[in-house]
Image 1 (cartoon, protein in one colour):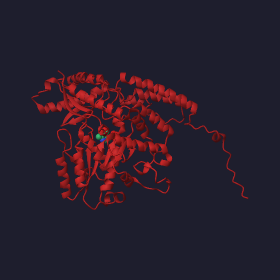
Image 2 (cartoon, helix red, strand yellow):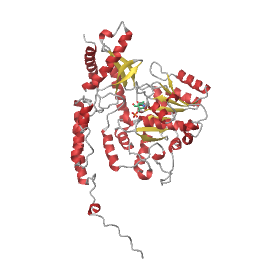
Image 3 (cartoon, protein in one colour):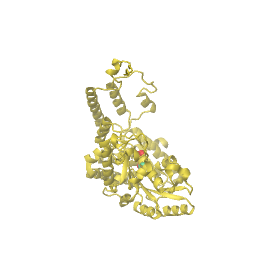
Image 4 (cartoon, protein in one colour):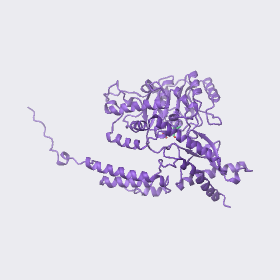
Length: 508
Ligand SMILES: Cc1ncc(COP(=O)(O)O)c(C=O)c1O
């Protein structure tokens, strides 16, 4: 009989292991309660404080010890959590502040904050069913509910991704896979023996489209930027003309992108007509609904929004207008098979049930976090009706602001679409300027400075748009904490700070 080899006796340190990152269940309970108490106090104080503290990069860097080296020895979790909470609440921009109106970034629904906590406690890897059975089912149900919410066929395919860019990338890749006349997955762009692949998007389209063509080998020159009308909507005559001329030149049109709420002004492209063009020319119809798709069934929205139901794929972004904590985007694809066709590989080292949903097979990620939980919980907390009410209220507030601007001689209303209003400050003496060109330049400079000045003040936060060459301030309400009084306070803030900036730039 062979004598088994004697392995060295385990040291006590390994039999009673005390790992440097471990926390006992009792200690975890204590720390977590304490953290929740601190967060609750800090969140309650947010509305009374500045939207963003006015401090230099250096001050922010020093709040965490700047260039301090990696600590050699560990420290107690309690002190670390308390210090991190304090620093984060002292040195952050609060998109949950009722006067935050920048970009398209919502404050988080608190059920989503708790959902993220729960998700990371269970920590399922939602790449494969076997690794995350319930989480996979929750994601599949979330995808179906999102489709129902926006009026898209509920038997579509789909998955959660990090945000709007990724959601659009997934639609883009499915379009390229399905419409390219060669096996693009195998031979890449080099396999194209025909003319150049062409895609069509209005010149108001978000910059994800440049990243997509760049990252996925088509190059930004493959984009045909289609002109927009006076309401920033894609011009259909220009679209058809460009497609016809590309076909005549031997190129291969494959994709048209329609905006369901453009990033700058909330414009909604004529989606039903674009769908008809795509059918006629056999092109993939992708809708970028990162901002506006969830408003498709809300009251008082452009009827064209409902045309997203005809798309081959739609990007939806719960971390925008569904108020999910960042990150949460979602792609819906009409024919679920197209996701598998675009992304699936079956390596030998994975032994997964091929009949089950394995999300690593349906998108670019392998290991995947449980993003769906926060969205799933919030959809149930608010229900469809609750979401429609919140979205309708955000739209009403943005429209109310647009109407308010009428009462102020120095404020010029520029555009209004969904929950976005753009406007600018014009000193009264420049309203009817005799030197329009010089005034135009000056107003652009003034409004850029004003944007920064408002940010520094902490009284509100806007971002910007450029409307027919005019630098505009841009208010976007995707903020369920904003009330009428927040909106009504804004004209006074903008005119007061506008006057200050004007006096600095044009000392009299
Ligand atoms: C219309 C539109 N598409 C795509 C994006 C990109 O979304 P994300 O920042 O979540 O990647 C945005 C962001 O504002 C957007 O407004």
